[in-house]
Amino acid sequence: MAWPERVLRSTSTPWLPCLLAAASCLPAATLFAAESGSFSASADLVAQALAYEHGEGIAKDQRKASLLYCEAARSGDPEAAFALGWMYANGRGVARSDEMAAFLFARAAAAGHAYAREMQRHVGYDGGVMPDCMKLSEPDPPVMLVDETPDPFADLPRDKKKIADLVLKTAPQYGIEPRLALAVIAIESNFQPGAQSVRDARGLMQLFASTAVRFKVRNRFDVNDNVHGGLAYLRWLLAYYQGEVTFAVAAYNAGEAAVDRYKGVPPYPETREYVRRVSRLFSNQRHSFDPSVAAPSPILSAERTSGPKAP
Image 1: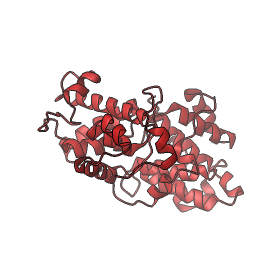
Image 2: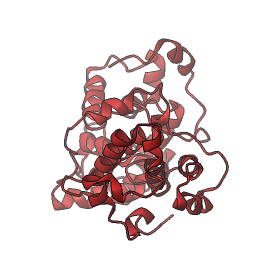
Image 3: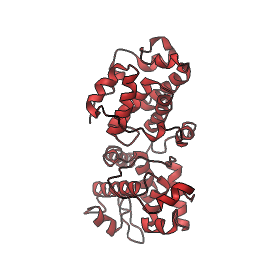
Image 4: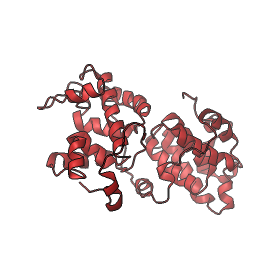
C-alpha cells in the first residue's frame, strides 16, 4: 500500500515542534492520555518517536521509532497507536502487517482519533492482530528503548547503501524486518554480491545450491535473485520457529536440521559466533511470522516450557 506521507504530518498542525515545545498545540485525540494522568510520559515518547521516524535533529531510525510508539500506545495514547499502525501498514521500521495495522487503527479510532477511522478502510475493520510489542509479557521493547546504539546501517558507503535500499524495499514484502535482513547480509557477505565461501555458498545472502533450488533462485550472484531467495528462506525459518529469531538465525547458518537435532543453537563455534554477531545488529529476539508458510518445528513444544537455549 503506497500511501503518501502520513496524514498526521500533512495536516496544518506542526506536529514535531508542537510535541517538543508544548502540549497546548496537540489535537484533542492526544489529550486522551492526559485524562489518565499519563500525558507527560506518552507525549514525550511520541515526540521522541517522531524525531527518530523522520530524522528531525537526530539520526533517522524507524525501528527505534516503532518501539517508542509502541510503548506510548501500550499506555493508551491514540496518536501513538495511529502512528504505529501507519508504520505496520507501510512496512516502515517493522515488517508490514495489515492485521496489526487494523488492530492499532481500531484502538486509535475507539479513542476518538479522527484519521484512524479513515485508515481502517484500507486495512479492514475486523479486530486485527495485537503486535508482540503491545503485550505486557514481552520483555524486548523496554530493553530496546534504552538501547542507544546508533543504527549500524545508517551511513553505508554508496555501493552498500544501494543494496540496503533494495533490502528496505523488498524485506517487507516477505514480512521481514529490514534490519534483520541487513544484519544477515552484513555478516554473511559484508554486502559483497560476488562473495563465495569455501563450501560454495554464493552472493549477498550466501545461498547454497540446494537453497537456491528450494526458493527458485536462478543466479545466486544476481543481487535481486539472491536477496529474494534469502528473504524467502528467512521468512520460512521464522515461520518454522514461530518468530524465535535466535533459532531462525542459527538455522540460517547451520541448517534447520542441526537446530532441530540439538533442540536449540548447535554447539558449533561458527554458528554460536554467527548468532552473537547477528544479535549485535538485530537484538530483538521475537519477530512476527506467517504461520501459513511452514508448520512449526517439533522442538517448539519443549522449548515453550523451558525457554530457548542461549548460544
